[in-house]
Length: 247
Ligand SMILES: [Zn+2]
Ligand SMILES: [Zn+2]
Image (tube, rainbow, N blue to C red; front, side):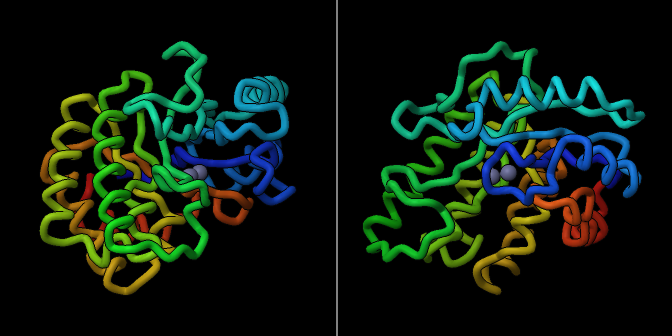
């Protein structure tokens, strides 16, 4: 698998990326590091001009920048937590925005960000866990979804699961079958791999990748860069590719 493509890059318009992440700097940096293909995938958060406005702004800026890199403008969209399988921003045609990444940035039924320290009871954890899988399963069937962004990240936080083993892998196996069936890609996300909450989770996450490979699920590589240094910088992803001999 070539590491000359980065399918997950953010911009200043996310409101939380580094201020150097302008479209022209992203292109410059991508050229410098030898990427052949990138996807600018801003969040669907209602920030700056909102999902539609930010998308258009990025497109317009891009049109003024000459480059040999194949650049597409996609979006990273959160699921609608209440309506199974729906996206929280859905007002676009399938061919208009590519690729569509779907990623959780909050817990189902909890109004706090994924990165916050939260004390969950066992019951909360079980509820979030099964809800997450249920939502993921239905999202895969949504024809607008191309890529599952940083899959599993939300259930790794705050002790929802302790490792990717046993019944957790069985549940990922079901996701893999659905992803294969609906031709949805599973993201290998460099930022996620660099920020595993515990060693147990880190050491067992490869089991999940293995399941995706076993079922021939498409993989998508993304840095999830929020600053220029991270664009196309694939250390952990490269380890995975070597380790699993991914072609
Ligand atoms: Zn994300
Ligand atoms: Zn992202």
